[in-house]
Length: 159
Picture 1: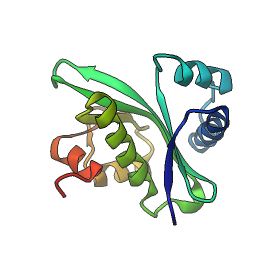
Picture 2: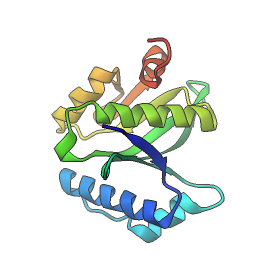
Picture 3: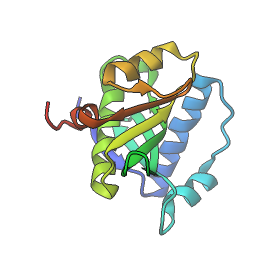
Picture 4: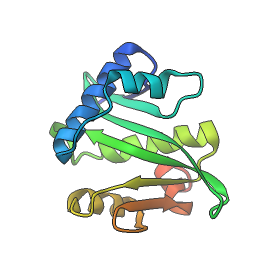
């Protein structure tokens, strides 16, 4: 597999991200409210509200939607991953970790993110176990956070 990570920057990229996010909504049984127009406004302005990342090989294998967050408690910037999707046909091959690692590296470069947070449904036991294996810790029933050495490890720094 020759994975390529590409930021969402064009209309074609937006269409791929929209496709991934719609599939994620179906997987989760959620309503999908953010169509192409909402994604365009959120990702394509002078100051984006979020960033999109595509993981491709011969086709779309995964995607993430993420953005900056700052914590006065932590005294540092972080990255909030609002959506992570990996195609069902390639799950279990480490691609979810690869997408999160790329998000961590990009957020580190863009705004010096030192930690990552995301939400996962309490009843989603498989995804929760996946995040726990990466070092995420539950903050409450839905929020999980990765910080410190585990964040560095995910980015491929220090082990």
